[in-house]
Image 1 (cartoon, rainbow over the protein chains, first blue to last red):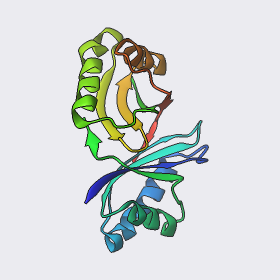
Image 2: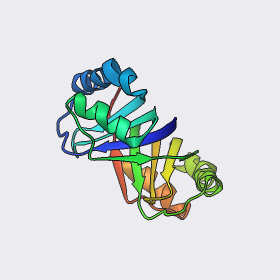
Image 3: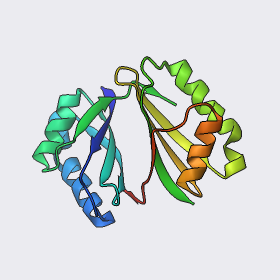
Length: 82
Length: 82
């Protein structure tokens, strides 16, 4: 398992309820890929969303996001934290 | 106080020690601007670094990063979380 930061662009106007629903849609199916989504942050004005997860691979993170209907723009490994 | 996500580009090859030192440089002076840096994640390969903070403004976040010698590429408010 490794840590990942994924970035979504174009989510302009996302609400607290919308982010919660999107995050829950990930949580509902993440077990099938061994992914653990830990936190999500959104800026409705720029349309940016960031998610931190632990997962077996970046591809596993993206597969969950795709199946949940909101593919990430990019998924980055983040092996370094402080 | 509000939550912010700031993004640094071009930090290729950043090490755990390097991120820790950069983060500590922020922590050492953050009080002067009322900023609370909470966590940082880095991808040495792409050179991307993300920091989450609580702060009075995006400008306060950037002033700390600038004074610590590593200005952010962008600072986003993240009023929505899940």
